[in-house]
Amino acid sequence: MEQTVGRLLVGKTPTQLWDTPLRILEPACGTGVFLVRAYQYLLDWFGGDLPPTDRVRILLDSLYGVDIDPIAVEATRWALVRMAGKTQNFSAAAAQAIYVELGQNLKSGNAVIGPDCSDPCRDCPLDWEREFPAILQAGGFDAVIGNPPFLDAELMVEHWPEQRRYCASHYRTASGNWDLFCVFIEKAIALCKPGGFTSLVVPNKLGSARYAAPARQLLALDNQLLSIRDYSMAGIFPASVYPIVYVTQKQPPQAGAMVRVEQVHPGKPPIVRELACDRHFKQPERPWPIFAGALPLTLLDQIQTRFPMLGSIAEVCGAATVGEAYQLQPLLQEAGADAAGALPVVNSGTIDRYHLLWGQKPFRYLGQRYQRPVLERHRLQVLSPRRQEQVLQPKIIVAGMSKILECGVDLAGQVLAGKSTTIVRSSLNLLHLLGLLNSRLLTLIYQSLFGGDRLQGGYLRIGPPQLRALPIWVPNLADPIDQQHHETLIRLVERMLVLQQEPDEAMQPEIDRLDQAIDHLVCSLYGLTEAETATILEP
Image 1 (tube, rainbow, N blue to C red):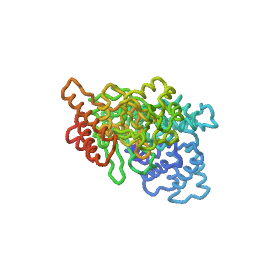
Image 2 (spheres, one colour):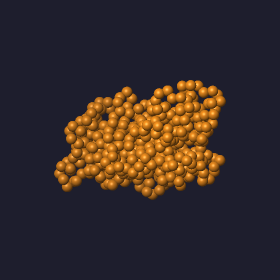
Image 3 (tube, rainbow, N blue to C red):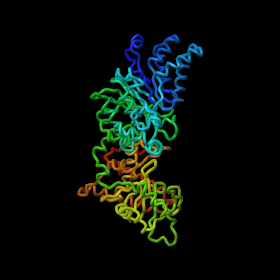
Image 4 (tube, rainbow, N blue to C red):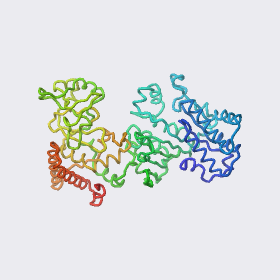
């Protein structure tokens, strides 16, 4: 409230606010949590023991809400009525009268679906111009706040396809594999008056998802992004929810403006950084640097500037589409004595750093469980020629869901990578790339860029678009020093692969030493100082 309603009250007097009340909207109000807080904030600001008539006047003048659930709207109305009468209980008749009047402020309907939808009875559209004519004719609401529903693309396609099609044709943020929060960001800004503020609780995917680029442009290029507070590590939301709260002012962005970024951690003061908006938030196709933790932002900038992206030196693609995954599933079988020449099959659960865990760890695939899954080579014909070529070529295979980058290698071109994995093919030595991708530094870079794609339990969503953006050290083989570093890295990785093939507790100390040697070498290749390396690699 301090960053939205509080900003609007700076320099104001109670007399001014009585004459020109603030208009505060919660467009997906549910049971009115944010409206109740906004109401309390206004009451505290006016101060003193306000008479009931003034408390009611503030309520009716300033607080507005919408929700698709009429029962939730009713609950919000009664919650606000109870709050208005907190210092002096209203009679049943007085409370009912206030409740009825609040019907002009709190409406039931779908905030992002207009009256031009194809099926009004099903879609519950809301005609904003009709429901709030005076406010919108005056330019809009002073503040738009709240916590819109977290509905992803898959859920909408399955349950609300018509509404998804409507949004795709009415909102610029509804592009690609968009989630509903993107549309709410756009609607909030549209409903806000010039100079006003919008602040929503949204998934931290806003900061890194490719489909959220139009929303990032709206917030930071078309308007003035003021602050972002990251609650994803706060432990106050369900385990699968990683929210951030942004504040944007509806005005052209000012040159030289700073964005306040806070990371909230349980039991600790927030980590606060001031980032230059022009430098860090003006390229919407790139992730916002709001997830950087162990990796300093200046170092991240330096690395991104100096080194080419993986996508420019390698082919990086998904190993199997959803359709291909379903094609393959009935063809998989357990390896038997007659399985010579069949292709082992791996997925994210059977990929470790430097090691494919085929046959060592149970393999789950579309509800089926295997121990040693294979595909007979001739059955590859169900795949396209391009997919067949990818399977039979040397490649790096990257797990699609893990807490760190986990990459194995198929140097012989005889492993089939299943769904939710990425394959990397390149003319650059694959062992060189494998050492870089499995290093601590590349994981930190990935977390700093794409921390917003975290899944439940802190797992990262790792896919081709993100991997293509990783900066890669490419040796100049005409330079003797580069050549030496290149050969050293390959030699270390070769030894690591040998040790990982037959894991033994007695070998673990040497594996740890190899890991440390690779990590230190990679940090050196990326130009880190000894002090920076020590900070990044500390346990």
